[in-house]
Length: 596
Ligand code: BEZ
Image 1: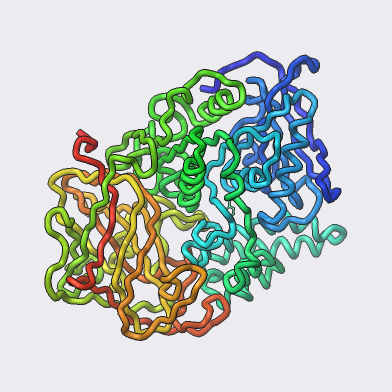
Image 2: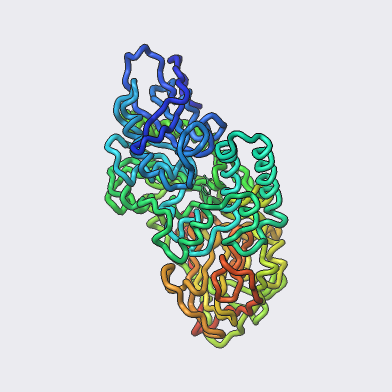
């Protein structure tokens, strides 16, 4: 429960702040109505989703925070809603962030110290501002957000060099909608036509739009008259200098306390963890990382097919406190020196799925966790749930010793493996999070490697990686790996996944040749998870070549997938023998950490 206060609150709407180039941005300001007697820290959020719409109050209810002694500033970013200027995703957030922090610090009633908060884009606006070192910035609370927009593994434009396709195009179409009345001012009929055209494209994405090619002249954008930011992203793959950079690394130099909030099924989990680790590596100990079993912007205790228990959710975290009150405690601690839960908060607090308990750690991964390899094997028919793929731990002698069969499948980009659950931000008709994978595991183009039913729990907490020895007959192609928890009744619940583009196997800035039939060792970064595989459950790794429309399809021709319409079928092979020990790497906690 948010602590109550009887302090009256004053709200001022559309308060103008002039940026260094003369553009005026507007904010709602909530503050204690004390006749000007007091000075309070500022809590600032900057978002493109409308300061007057529900998301403007989603992370923190401004009136509640003001009642507790803060000046709360909720600002529309440049080019959105009440603010002037042009909106181009991420581009202006560094300068505007700096200018707004310094403006907010000097508002009447402000004490000169600013904390920032927010989720996703308005998590990012914090890092963008911090990268410019505004002197009045004192604390950050970024939730479900990425690190550097231009980073090839940030999850916002790319995942490991592969376009984070479906969620990004859906987001850009939706962001174009409130732009229309700004662009078409004096012609109501033209405006109505434009709104109709755009919403039609949004509606058609799942059934038709996502499949259209080429991506650089993407039909839904062309017909809706939008897509500038998308084209820019595609250009940036060939010319990284064009990428919208956020210079977040410069923010790591600041001695700011930061409360990083992530979700096991959030598409920005990798960046959330990377930001925490980078701040800690810079010697800044006032960092706290909280990771729940959550999807993007959703902290409910039920996600996908799984109920993780009430205390996994934001309503009563770990029997202690709701997420908004915890956020306020963070600012009370960081900006007012209050003694509260943050005095004893561990650096890392994470939800261990499967056991369904919260755990503490000093670092990520937890220092007690040790890597364990789980080796793939089969008699050459690991295709689908009906196949013979197995997974066994090196601890019990799982490493292959002799010649073994090779698994193979045909990847056809015209019929890609559909995205079912996982860490994505696709339109809501695509389910998110921990969803049963059996519908995709029915397919012959999905290799399924499962352990025997476990006799004792295997408690995993840390990064997950798949090392695969693969070959293809295509000039380029992708491989996708997914870690799955198989329940005794057969449910196959997705945990985490990743993708690699064969031509980018040597690094994301170099394009390496792919020779037909040659065996390559690839590392697939599946980011992180924390899951107790319980007795009777199986550990499973699915290997395939697509997850569409979440990731762009590799068209298998070797041409830039964003610019072509040609595609061909790739014949893929996954080797697992003594010379090619394909395996999954997990961080496993000692037995005493296993759930009772
Ligand atoms: C978001 O705010 O949810 C978001 C921002 C950029 C890309 C995708 C999602």
